[in-house]
Amino acid sequence: MVREGFARPGRCRDRHGQCGAGAGLTKGPMLARPETPREPGAIMRPAIVLALLIAGATPAPAQAPPPYTPGPLNITMPADWATRFLNYSSIDNEQRKIVRRFYVNPEALAAATPGAPLPSGTMIVMADHRARLDAQGNPLRDLRGRFMYEPTPFLLSVQEKRDGWGEGYPADIRNGNWEYARFNPDLSRQAGMDTAGSMRPCFTCHLGVRPQQDFAFDFWDYVNRPR
Image 1 (cartoon, rainbow, N blue to C red):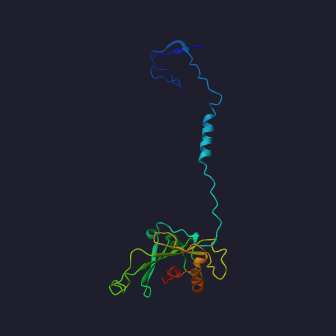
Image 2: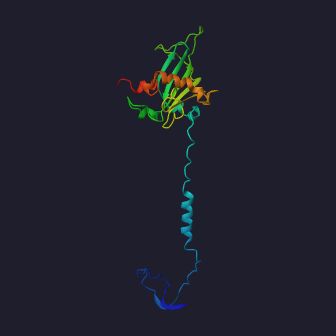
């Protein structure tokens, strides 16, 4: 196909009629460049690819959590509790020759309000450490008279509160929305402490002594201390 136009030995006109070099233009035939044929579906391909990418990026719907069943298996001990939780109190037990150190997750400490129930998500850890003893079997003491203790606890007792927990416990032991559990230092569950009945002593103790303090001991006292 031939049409009249300008043949160019140099630069051609651009789309706005501007020319980079004004000289050297001669009139002559110009060959029209043949159009490249397109397949019928070629125009749709980018849209199809985009749709597939969007479909592939859509997250799968979240699975619903399993139904709540009363018992200590609801509590999972965080692997980083020893470095992330805050130690807010400790007690020397003269009779048992142990030191009890109390920890709470920082989120609960930030959300706790004096006079109000403790927030859902509160996890309190009571870590029992053996006191270091002298040759006569008496606890060694520091300058303040407090027990020196072994760095690794031998028992971790935990209570955790979550909305929706507690349903299914009889009224004579239910502690609001609290559950209890016991762990070894390696965070495995203490043997025989994997059923709701195994934690009954914890429920009856807290229910009998601290029902007006949201079933909590030292952490409630810490939150409500005089300031």
